[in-house]
Image (tube, rainbow, N blue to C red):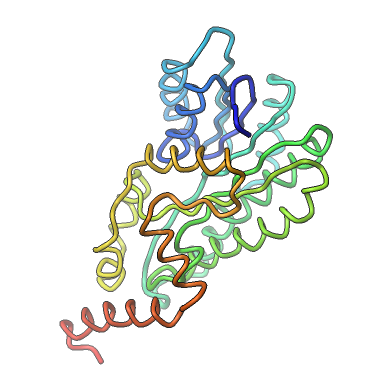
Length: 275
């Protein structure tokens, strides 16, 4: 996927954050864009932003209200989009959410909702579109997280959902190669999105300490890294140097990552008088 001009791209979570930045960047490259999200007003505003940066006349744009955790809504909105755009070349799954808390404070309802939005949402869109992509090839990007490569304090439900995306994508990638369908996983670090602001409301102090030294990226920086990774057909796409180093150390010397995080966690707990 060296050139996105003329390609039709479906983006879930496309009304804000990383999804919106990716949509605008692809619009600048000449792609046709369909975005999917739950909030109608935000979708329409995002669509105007995407259209304003288009590369050429003739590009097509549309938005669809859809909760990706509901397979019936995915079927309805994606069917409409396929008819309007006459197919889909690229699927980019960016819908997701996180409410970090101590494990015992995470209710089963929150866990279930996190899995449905973050992981089942990916499953639902892929299961609907893969049969169509098999006919002419395509590209699928599923958004995980650095917390989908490294389990992080306070993210038990979130990391579970994001690790699931990595495993699912690796297996799917193996199955779809013969159909000329590429599968990649985007693993961004902390990114300055509306969702990140929500995360900070419930984040345990230990989690804040772990992420304190990490550089906060902008959605635009992540979008640029994504497109660069797609053009090289990378499977795991990381957005910055720090994330790459963390991933490499986790793979080849996991005890180092564990010791660093344990130190940061104990430092906070010591201040609180906890053992």
